[in-house]
Image (cartoon, rainbow, N blue to C red):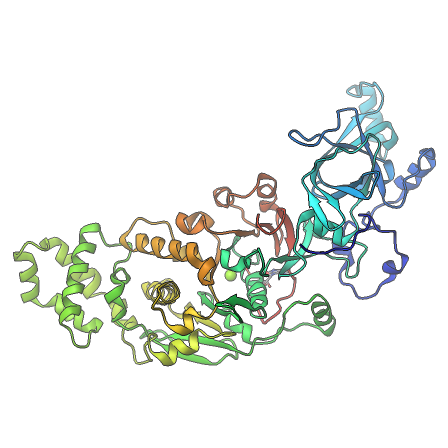
Length: 600
Ligand SMILES: Nc1ncnc2c1ncn2[C@@H]1O[C@H](COP(=O)(O)OP(=O)(O)O)[C@@H](O)[C@H]1O
Ligand SMILES: [Mg+2]
């Protein structure tokens, strides 16, 4: 049980905090004692006119009983908001309703409305004309009502489901106590930093120092498994901030330790990088001292990561153009890998029959070849004597065989991707370096992007890692290192297709996702098409982070609570909703506006 000091949910207004220097961009933040920005004439007017019950520093209004007050099955909670506070109350914002003892109900504003104070039909010509000339309404003539959605009862450092009903006329206040809000929203105090709690894209601000609320993913032991091994999906449209935020989060993992076989080990992070962005994590970001100081104060890992290596696939005819200072190691994919993974040659374009015949050919070829190579296999398939043998014996239709000649044996891409001069990825000297505690290994594929070569490289290597991680006889360095496998543009590799290759991929990665928790293998998928991620993989994903997504089907495919879903199309750059039910209540978060390593 996490310990937190017991205290009232709303801490007294601290004047010191108002003048506290260098806590960051205040204008962006909402929620604190000074959360209301435009409290001008309306407020003054409000104070004068409503002198019977002037609002206190933190009170916004009271719970009213007119529509009933209920928690439980069909919660109903309405607050009357006093005139001076109206412009400050927005949908999504967090408010608290203290109980007479030191417990409090944390709520979220679910809806806002005006209602008439006095019986008066204002739908008439005279009233409308008069209103158009006036420069504002007389707020006091109207009720301003907020429907509040109960989130949790906060009792010191504990939270419960909303099981107590607030009294009529109970005060409704801004939530300004950081620890209490974390408790109410169930946000862990420790763990991997993702961003700051936000509402409508603006950081929630409390009376603590720093005033922002850090959102972290549980990364500790005891009864909770580190969430990284229960898989993460980052979804968002192009330019929404996926890579920027993915890099920031991956950088945090590199500073963590995870238990594996009774030892605490640093993870290896492997990134498949179609846009040539992640090897830049080797380099320092261009940020000022002030920002660094703030990151330090919040325990955020930052700075170029020294132990970064770019593992560059050697594909004939494609040159890699580095944009970072990380050391580069070239590797190639040996055709030998097709022995265990015949599907590497069977892209989506092979039919069922063709796939079956291909498997037969590969089996026969590998059985007899001393030094199997793609060229050797190609010759084997193209050899007229072999063709005749397979066709005559009825093991292959002529059309099928000819299709394989064309699609596999004479496929120029396979000739360029397999058996290149660089050391094979299966060699010790590559694999030992590739997966080590604390290693960030980036596989840039930009130079071969959108070609079949990219798919072969990514799938061959990712499978190699997954197979070693999951099989009992896997390589020691892979089995014994906690591994985070990140795939940017993941929909290109884990698509829900029904091809022979698609089925193998779905099976393999679905299994990896299922066993990852136990074996310490975390998938970290980044995509603009979450709907395209194969279902067996998708359903194992615990943490879903959605940045801005315009496509309705894509949003729906995320399968997140409606209240979060509704916000996704409105997210600005770096704004995200986080749905991680084992970690916290669903929340909105804004990622760091600066990259903690170099980006771009
Ligand atoms: N929280 C943020 N605040 C400000 N700018 C951001 C934020 N997150 C991302 N960006 C910027 O937005 C741009 C696009 O982000 P990027 O991560 O490259 O997009 P994509 O979703 O296509 O991967 C980059 O210049 C990035 O630095
Ligand atoms: Mg990107």
